[in-house]
Image 1 (cartoon, rainbow, N blue to C red):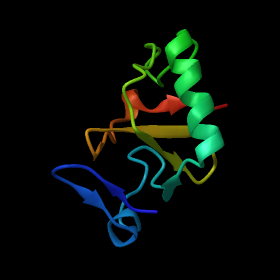
Image 2 (cartoon, helix red, strand yellow; image 1 turned 180 degrees about the vertical axis):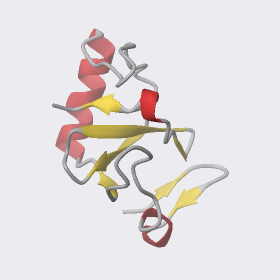
Image 3 (tube, rainbow, N blue to C red; image 1 turned 60 degrees about the vertical axis):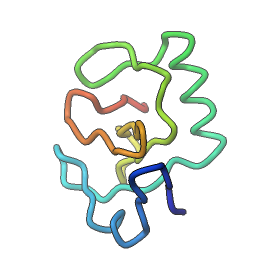
Image 4 (cartoon, rainbow, N blue to C red; image 1 turned 90 degrees about the vertical axis):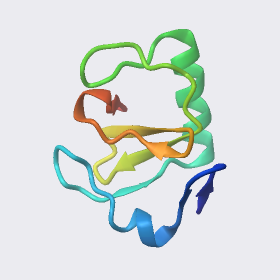
Length: 90
């Protein structure tokens, strides 16, 4: 899957270089059904970041860590790879 925006395209080659800033695990795209559930949870205010803040529902995609416990939002085509902005998935 490639994610395109007006000013950035995350190709599979670029994705293969991205890792979780905390654990250094590889990242992969959230599947469509899981992404929709995350968006609904964020809209309801039920989704939290690693830092404990509510997740803003303005993300267009999520990069998920290999272990499936944390994801990183992609906003405006830019992956937000900051530890405290990671989304708790489990």
